Image (cartoon, rainbow, N blue to C red; front, side, top):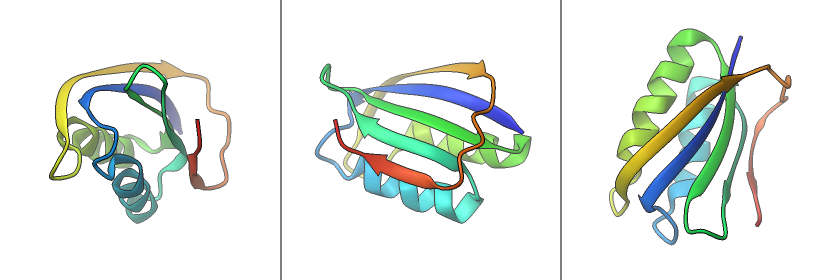
Length: 90
């Protein structure tokens, strides 16, 4: 089990990024959350196995159709044992 903190920069708010991220996470069995940040970025905490997180991270670099990704920062930290994947409000 790995845990990643992911911050996505670019045109990522108002383009269904959070909803699409949740759908991808649910499909891959990734647990955690996604939320919009006040600075215009999207922040994600994701937990899963190596393969699932690799696929999930690949999605984060592409995003939904209307998103324009400029940069993705990741950091591996200790797992928090999330039970599901949620969309959090600011």
